[in-house]
Image 1 (cartoon, helix red, strand yellow):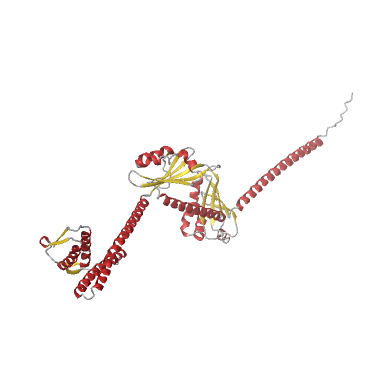
Image 2 (cartoon, one colour):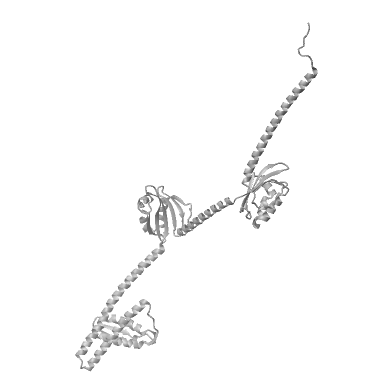
Length: 486
């Protein structure tokens, strides 16, 4: 039987075919690998582009960003805005970060702020701080740049760290808009603080006028002490039952005769009703030490129905005003008494004035009856002269009283003889006493004065003695005896 071979042996053709097949497979594998590598490169590129876009977005908020190796001080410039001071420095990649920061501080920072900036931005300080924190910030002020920015914030963030390297990202951004808002807020806070301080000073000054101030919750019968004699305008920590506190003050400090009158006023349970149509009620009382106080309940808060829920209880000393009130009452009484005395004086004086006037009229009429009798005319003239002298004395008394009240009266110190004054008075009142049937005796032996020449006002002395003698004759009965020492 003959064997038929459908595939004759062709060694060279098979080898070529296998080689081509392998080559095709390798090409396919290589193509797949290249495609996969391209895809990976494209993905990496896309990631890098995304990171770059993100970095650009981040850097857009910063005027300058640096990638710094803190161990060596070398740095890479990632971003610098136009119109900045650092742009004018023309920094290069090979520059040292510390040296560049020092140069920037010298050129663009105010002298008083340079050292603090250089200490903070130094690579040693950044490394020490970033070893413990992921991010640190610092605010400073520079000379205005071409964009008129002068307030800046420096930020440093740790990127990577190993045994040999320490990489950080250091960025700068202007914060003038933030500072402007902060300044405005600070000014508002300062204004509010000044207003609060002024209000506090005013309230404290007012509080000094009060011995005690209490804030009372009427519904809960609860009090808080706002101030007392030693602690002004602040909560002292004293608090508790308002009724107990007020009654305790009443029983321990109010004078006993006023306690029964004050206790109803201190009744907290009736405060709301008593203040229904009033904004405040008050009372006055005397303390155990004799001083006077006034207590005032003032409405602080009402509910929607108008009922009082909270009041302020203030206590102040009114001893001075009470004293002034008493002084005014005393002055009023004194003025009333003085007016009564003036009225009485004028009534008496009018009677005393009419007496010599009537005597003068009578003497003139008698003179007409004895017109041809020289002796009688002489006696009548003497009597008229005595009455006129007496009348002048009365008028002088009235005038001197007016001068004394107005402060115009001036005392005169004169040298006079007491004997002459007494002789003249005795002569006058001897005749007056005789007319009333009174015996007028002068006992010179009982005189005790050793000097007759004195310094003073003889007119005033004569008036005083005349008033005494007038009363003695006026209130003595006919037939009595008036005895005077010489």
